[in-house]
Length: 469
Image (cartoon, rainbow, N blue to C red; front, side):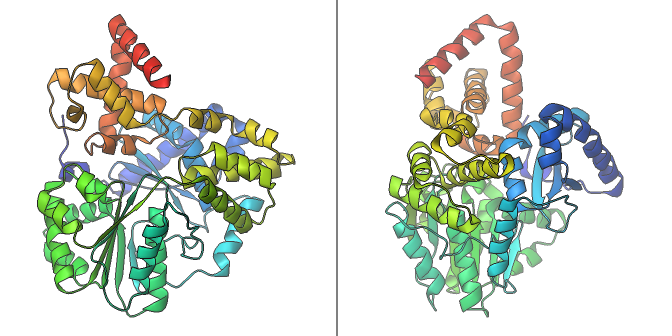
């Protein structure tokens, strides 16, 4: 059964429910220790504290970005599964950073990161960031430019530095972790510093939809319109999220037109170009192509090496060039994974006192290197499953619910969860913008069916072999 946007975004925030979820969090902590081990729990998870529970999302506070990112990459999915054993109303786990939260000790890497932040964090009095805050490290000076991103970088700088609107909108697109968000934050910081009189709103498309639905529920749409149509610069991240959301698209369409008519700047990022975004109205697609569409390609080896060298300077830790070259050759997917790998080997060296070598890096990153040797995409999975079950590839993204279509789609979601490192929300977006709960249901359904259906198990094994060879 599908859930309408309004239903899925209902606000569940009251003191009684908050107390229940706080108790749920405390109960889950004992299982975290059993699941991950006492040493890991004390080193990484112990400082986390319960924040609040809103709209099915359990919000947990971490003391530093470094710790949050590490936990997000290594433990968050299993933590969510454990929490859901206590209360099925928990649909997602959100980690946010509050530096003053309780914390028993700081690692050298975290201290270095804090020093970088303290050196120069621009004031953001004229920027209204709705949702997570701007990342101080994401400036133009910290962005490493190469052939794969030079157009997007040049366009972003032009828009940020211009005293009048040049490209409207500026539409940046590219795969996960290639630098779109870095450029978006860099634009915002530069405008804040150079043009403090300009009013800027920066938020994700998901947050835009949430606020719009909330305005509808509380019959306060006029305030919503005034908020977004009176700014000098509107910045929307992860625009692909509103694909297929008709009412949100309609509101954004009118907001976009109002801003462009006033010669106010609109800047958008997404994972695909306007022409390739599914579930987007044709008039919206046309409007998004009015200005400049700039893509960010996968990184070249030279760019990957440059990013690693820049990162080692930031954290103040010397890493042998041969190790950086090894990482640049082996990890080719995206910047986040590349930086995450560097953080892992540096943290390991500091914690165990082991010299950083190619051998130690190979040992620490064994799982990551194995995944990069044969990286399977969701697109590949969808194509193979569609061919195997003789359905159209378009059915993987369509809203059709016929069993002959829905079952192959669920199998594709199951395989995407097993064979890729993508999160549930990311997988859902690849299947026509579906919610992460739909992916969870699909995975659970296929796991139940394969216990009873030998032919389905054979199908799954065959598909895995085809995808992994």
